Image 1 (tube, one colour):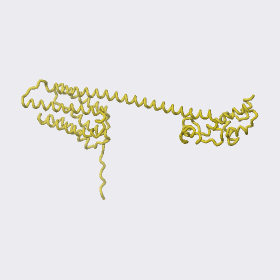
Image 2: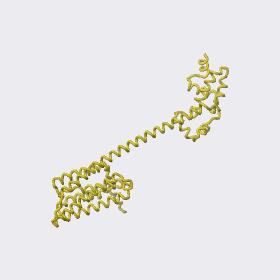
Image 3: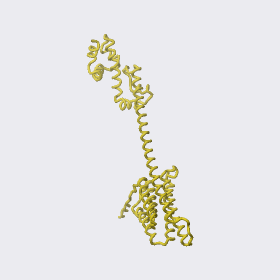
Length: 314
């Protein structure tokens, strides 16, 4: 018997872009404070695995538990190793770390639509990754100046503070633009929904007007053979479409609507032609039987044709 392979547990990183901005903004703020107090701690590089996992998530790719832990521990290792490695070794390690993650991130971005559309997320990731690379490069330059005893005009902490500050400003600007674009998108969707609803309402009104106009100016409905197909042909619509309009938009059926207009015509005949018998009116209005005529007359008028005539003439 063969063993069934175990299913690897997967976790789905459900960070929104706003969450990424808040998280990276917090990292930038902590790093800015650390540089201000000349602390050697550098935590900016935590942003790289965050970017990488966010990009994978946006491509609807789940991240395995092992992969997630690998990236988290990797960022912790690079923070800790700065206290144990020599400056030159750590700077080279930093640059390699940045280059590897940058290649991973942009290899995924290249396959997506971010770069093609000038997406704000692509712009943010590009610029912030540039700041990280610049940060590592500046530290390497100052290590070389210490080795070769070459003095630069600006202090290293001053430049690193500037990089952290602009990284923080980038987060706030991107967050503002993202929220503004989201509000604009919601507004556009709302306006489109309203326009769609108005168009649907206008279409409903137009359909109802067309049908009512037909019955007011045509007497075809008085023919016993008058059918839904004839009405649809006159309206230049499909039979099923006309039936749906009657059911959903006018809240009636074809037979009820025809009976309604036939009863209206019968009422006029009952009053204007007192000598005309009920049987003759039934035939004139297109009903197949007197019982059907009486049924619809009571439905719409609440009394029999005879009672209606006596009340109208009296």
